[in-house]
Image (cartoon, rainbow, N blue to C red; front, top):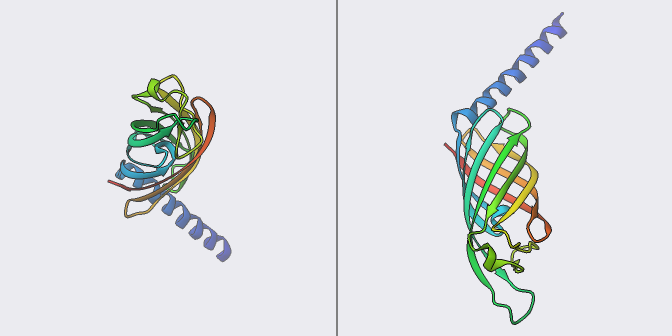
Length: 170
């Protein structure tokens, strides 16, 4: 009997902490963050918002550099706008996630055939890149967010990428 009471007590503590964690995402649904690599190629800023118990949608802004394959090709930089969604696999604030999105390339046709200096992505003739991946989000009670994701980016080729995000939920 005493052993059973101990297990019920332990189970109630675990359930209580899980419920307390799941409220944090809904209490602070906005996130302002800084991304290294990933959809931003080198670095960028992002904003995302929780839109349900398991969904998040966001957008970012980054400047990337591109160059051609030959020495005579010019290099340059342009702004890109990542649009994305995350699906959280658990309702806890420390959760694995699936992610998908597109990165808008406002100067897409001018970039055609060039590759990103910060990765292996070749820019397509269409004005966007598609991304699909999985990752993990760690959220502290203070609102600090750490998120990492592995992606496959499709443009003129299929290229792997890894993104690291630091941010603050509010």
